[in-house]
Length: 220
Image 1: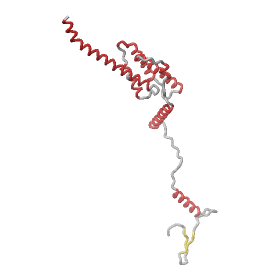
Image 2: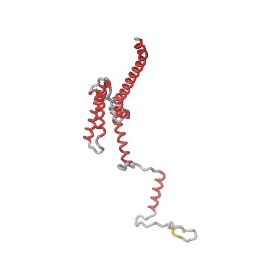
Image 3: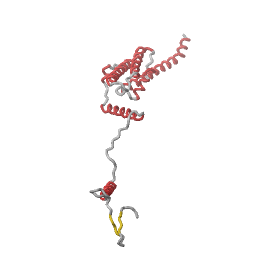
Image 4: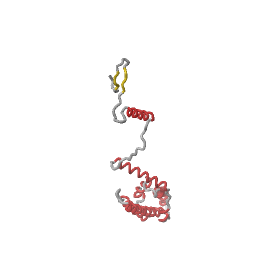
């Protein structure tokens, strides 16, 4: 009995410390998983958000199947890999609109399945209808995202030589004084020619000594 008392006295604190560490590790793992789930829930209407993409890429690490929750963890991994396969095999840039719409709808379904599996693994009770419909995404956000994508696509085409920068000149800058001087010059040039035969008009001037000469506009 004395040896058992000594053994329990020595081993008891070690077991208590290891148990506490195990509980802390389990709590840390759950916190990391919850952060992934929260990021996906908060950004599920905007799949291009950085937090959404980062959270997806952490699933394989944080939901690695093990322990008593292995079955539920594996369901999360399977749902994520199904979504990843669709994301990596999306329609090309030249795909028609129906194909793109079908692909987006399929990705939406995959995301709902992923969130449902994660909800079950974390002990939540969200329904698929809540995960699909319970999203607030203002129309202004959607319009802003579409405008940003259109701008980026236009810049890409211009920089790669696939498009041109459209330009439209609506007004030329003008100086009123310069314009008036041009009109006066044109009027005088028109007055220098005869209206009937178009001949250049010549004016004869006198030098004061009785000798006259024709002024042709050229220096003597």
